Image 1 (cartoon, rainbow, N blue to C red):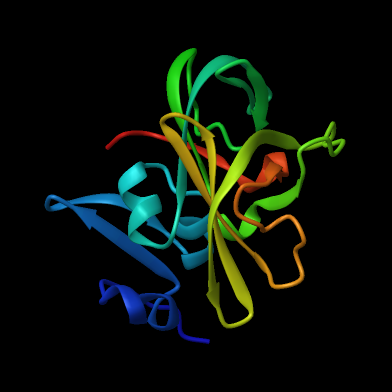
Image 2: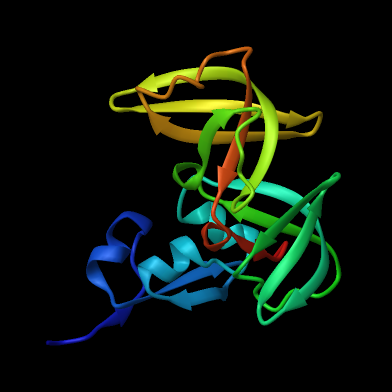
Length: 172
């Protein structure tokens, strides 16, 4: 099997190359395969470039064996992909399709979870796009299926995700 590398337009790159270079201001921002760019971006630029994304401002409290303990307001979160983060302010990225809606009182002890209010729901074929206000400056977009009973504007919900489904990213 012939392996290839190259620079392509965004839509065709994942079908044409084993490795893809995402460029920002004339420099390689990240060189990786399509799955790595999508699920493990190293920067906000790369995360946003390759797909829809939620950015959550957090404080890194500690990192042990690559897993970071984070604080978002008063909520403790964890992320398995800490990208070498140090203590202090950081940004957690989570893709909309990795988030799950549930009742606000749902037990999510084995998951990351933030509570919020559904602000809007947009129908798009087999997917509902839900905007959930977590707090004043933080709105998360969730992609969920049509049968999700929690996707009702005005309802209090929990937004949950597994610790492997996020990554800390730099501002570059």
